[in-house]
Amino acid sequence: MSSILRIALQKSGRLSEDSYQLFKECGIRFDYGTGKLKSVSSNFPAEFLFLRDDDIPGYVEDGVADLGIVGENVAVESARNIDTVHRLGFSKCRLSLAIPRGNEWNGIQDLSGKNIATSYPLILGNYLRDQNISADIHVISGSVEIAPGIGLAEAICDIVSSGSTLLSNGLKEVEVIFRSEAILIARSTLETEKQSLLDKLLFRIKAVQAAKN
Ligand code: ATP
Ligand code: ZN
Image (tube, rainbow, N blue to C red; front, side):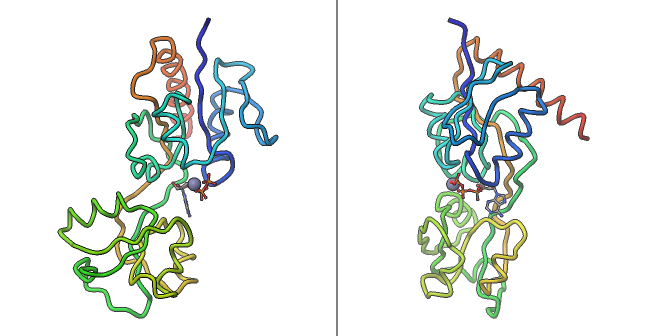
């Protein structure tokens, strides 16, 4: 049986459109947006799975998918054993610390002994350890930016792209701790046939990127 690459993409969200567009520009056709969970390409040995982004690193590690596109923030936070194959340059954002707008900020030491709400305990924990700061990390899965307003935390660590969400919640960005973009991830050991399909795909992706620069 000839092999086929299984590629996990975000079903719908901030990565989806650019991910679909990338394959289109690579000349790889498949249907999406029909509510289907998967779709086989009509002109490349690939099958696409449409999933929530948070589930993609795990599926790639477990071999349910061979490749996936996720934000680097999600890949790193997942702590999964997966390879970063290529940086894709879209869905750029940063993970930042923010505090109430009226509060003074003299530097990261201000967070010593404070409560910080985040959905990224691993990345934040590593950062604080590097900075020699001991603080309490409060894990919440969504709407992190409301935490200071309801007295749950004195600071937050969250994804920022424009800063308008912070502003509307009375917060100010004080430190960028991680910069992210979409990345192509792969299972750490691919069979020879799948590896050569991945090489073909990478060749096309690089050509598309080169044409844009
Ligand atoms: P899903 O329903 O698939 O779980 P989600 O709501 O968790 O989606 P999105 O908001 O679609 O995720 O964001 C996906 C990725 O896009 C983020 O992990 C991040 O890498 C990137 N991103 C770029 N800009 C932003 C932003 N302003 N807010 C959040 N994520 C952003
Ligand atoms: Zn998600």
